[in-house]
Every structure is written in structure tokens, then in C-alpha cells.
Length: 349
View 1 (cartoon, helix red, strand yellow):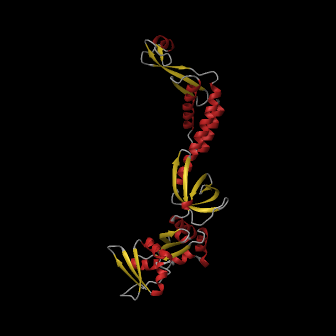
View 2: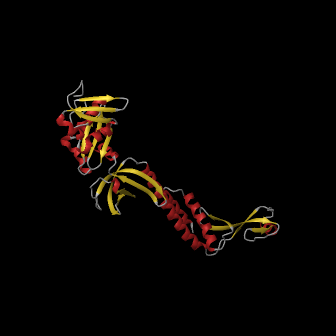
View 3: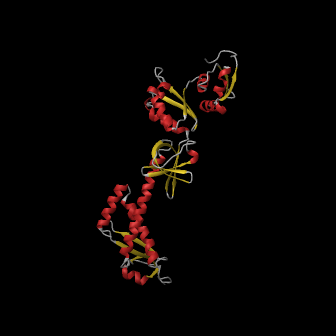
């Protein structure tokens, strides 16, 4: 070890964002273990000090001063201690340097291992903090490989996993393909941060609209909710703070470009863009689009809505295997009962 090592350590610490003292402290702790392992000092109380300027390393054995020595590995006689320092007495600790001649080589190897380990830990920590703060956000990555029904996605400095249960049903991902995904969860593990992605989560649809629709990004249009059955259909409720702004039109975009870009990313998933309304009956009616609703009766206590549609609109309102009604119920948070026939009173047109 020399002063060049200390300088290199300082430069490395600045580059990786690690305090030099943390690295030096870790090296000293590792050298204590190395000394005990290689020089039979397992029962000794030793300390290691690395000079912060020169890089020189010194190993000190700490021994208890006693009248009668019973264990020479941990005790030293009062007479021997006072030969070193006359002020010492029984019960004090005497430090004696026991640095082995060839300890420099071992120290260099140990320091290298410790520094690499600490850098890996620091980088993992920074990656964890970076991605944990982005939970619920959208990322773009490249499919790296697919193993045992799990897709591994490269995200720059990190690798994330996309379980088959979080993929869009029916989609086939291949290495080299670039995809957008929703950060579902970030966990800290001994092997580094574990980043779990999803392409089936409703949050992906929400984030895609925020990316593609400037009016949502700047707050002119607010996305009120998303109900999704991945790979098949999603319903998105939007609302404009300014009555002069058409929220549905803003999301569709010129010639449908904005919504088409989202549908392409979702592999052809159908999107119903619904106008949100503060009046529940109107919102529920809108949510059943593309079906035409003629009357909505609300039961506030049960939070249930009885919907009346024309006979020819019944199957459209319910949807294939009940999907349209199911998604509308999720989007609005109300139970929905759809029937056909003539209106009984004033309804929603």
C-alpha cells in the first residue's frame, strides 16, 4: 500500500459517490479478519490502522495487563507493559504492533476485494433507490432473454423481470425487442435490486396516456380512472377542467394518432375513452359506451345502478361475456344491472 493507493481510492470514491472513510473502514475490518485467518490470531484482540496519507498498514495486538499471565495471547504482565509505558497499570490495555513482514501482499489483495465489493453494494444501492422512487412509473427497456416463462428486460444499469402473468395475454416477446412496461415493485435483495415489471397493469394504460397526450401531462385534461382487461379492452375516464376543451378528442388526437400509438404499444387492445362526469348517473351511462342508455336509476345505499337500454342495445351494453358491463362497473365503482325496455321516467339521453 502507498499514497498512490489512497489517491486512487479518493478518486474512485468521488466517482462512485462513496465516502473514502467508509472504504478505508471496510478495508481495515477485512484486514483484521485476514490477519486472524492467516496468522493464527483468531483469539487475539487486534486492530488494523491504515495511514490516511501514506497508505501504510499497521496491525496492533491489544492485551489486558495482569499481575499473573494465564493466556499470553490475550494478556501481558505488568512488568512487560511498564517497560513499554511506565504509566500503565493492571486492567489497562497495552497495544503492541504485530504487523507481519509479508502482510502487504495480503493487504493489497484484501483491499482490492473489499473495494470491488463496496462499489458493487453502492451501485446496487443507488440503482435500488433510483427505481424504488419510480414505482408506479413507466420505463422503456429492451428484451434481453426469456427463461422459464420469465422475460428479462434491460433497463440501462439494471435488469428487470416480467413474469408471464404480468404480460399482455397472447403477446410474444423476443430478444432485442423494445417495450414499455409499468414498474410494479422494487425489492432490495442480497444479489441487488429486484425490479418487477408489468404490461397487464391498468397503470400502464394510464402512463401511456400521460406520455402521448400533452393535455394530460400539463393538467388541462385529468385522467379520472382506468378499468382494464389486458389484451382485450380498457375503459379510460377523462375530464377537462376547462369546458372549452374536449377531453375525449384530446386523447384521440389528430386523425386518431395519439390513441393509435397507445393501441399499438398494447398490441391492439381496444380502448374506450369515456367522458367523466360529476353526476354519477351520467358517468355510468357514459361508461357503458358504445351502448346507448335511456335511463339510469341509482340506489345510493347499495351503490347500485339499474340501467335501461333499448332492446337492440342490450347485448352491446352487456358486451361479450359481460365484459362491457364489468369494465363499466370497475371504472365507476358502482354495481350495474342492465335491462331492456321502455323508460319508466326521466332518464339519461
